[in-house]
Amino acid sequence: MTMENDVAFFHNVIEEWIAMPDVAVVCGNWKDGSISEIIAGPGARLLPAAYSDCFAGVRELRVADAPHHLHIDLARIHRIQYAVHPSVCLQFKPSFEVRFLLIGAGGAPTDRWCFSCMLTHPYRGDLADKDSVTEYFRIARRHLTSRRDVVEIDIARSVTQAPGFHRILDCLNSAFEVQVDATAVSSFLDSLSSPVDTRSVQTDPPCLQLLSESLKLTEASLVLFRDRLLVEFQTESLGPVLRYEEAGHVSWQIGETSDHHCHLALGAVTKVLFSAEEVPCQGGGLNYTIWFLTPGHSGNPYRRDGYFSVVLNSPYEGIAPRKAVIEPVLDLYRAYRDREWVSADEKFLDVVKNGPPVRRQLEELHASAE
Image 1: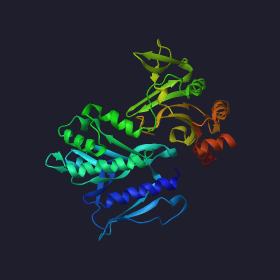
Image 2: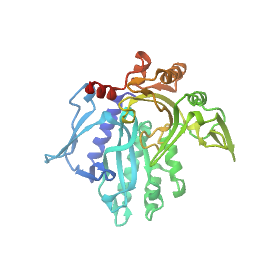
Image 3: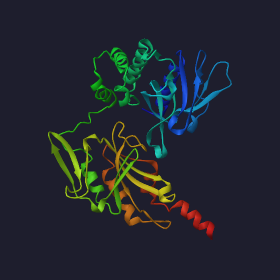
Image 4: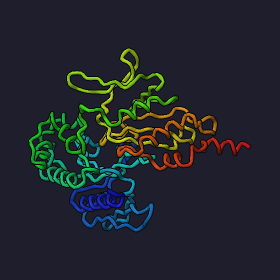
């Protein structure tokens, strides 16, 4: 699907939700310290596109008889998440939201959302209102059926263990015409959202050889990033990638058993992306990264599909690129670029064509000091 098709779909989803009674457009996230709510109400509307080119995704949300309005760039959205999570707006009972997840730095898909459409009265007393919550899940099912590539449903684990979840589960089962119990909710939602089966497979994962060669890069690290946890293994200290099986479960061990090592589900990796992104930790230089991506959320707070990566530690000496360190990454891309599951971002392709650039911020500092 093209960006234009995605923007049109997101536009239609927003229009559908703001036309419904008892829906608020919620901007922000309590993790950032504040949120605002715009009560849609009768007459709320999303104006058509007014610009072209890089602003083609910009829309204006208007509320009837009110000067307050909202500008939204739908081109910066990569996914819609139907989220049932505890909410301060509902005395920490679960909210029923339609979150629009943002594209982050370097085009990375994230779990951050710029706004959501939220049911304002989803409860009767302490229990979920059967009619409104069932309709919420019915719409989610319809949108998921039409665009599984950009729609998912997420119910927080704490919600499934909270009092009153039985009513929410009844609504889910009614909307999807299934009989799922509370212990199977997570696996049921995974089966809806994942376009491929990410269970262990008997054949070697397609990315295995590329990963093995990536781990031979010098002055690089194998990086696993999770919420409040960053683990780096220096590639020079890692052994080969080994197949590991226990009780029928297959994983891939990187590093010797007697030393530091990790186990990864390489069968879950469906794409590999070569990236060259300008980041502060490189002093305005490029971070040369080989991303191993999953089709759904991997737990990485920077990019949701970033299961793990191999990244160069020191690609610069002063302002000058260390070509002896960078060129092997470019050669690795050249060797695998014809594989359908391998791609590269725009900046990386520019480096392949024109060579590694100097470190920009240090170059500017150096120039200003002269």
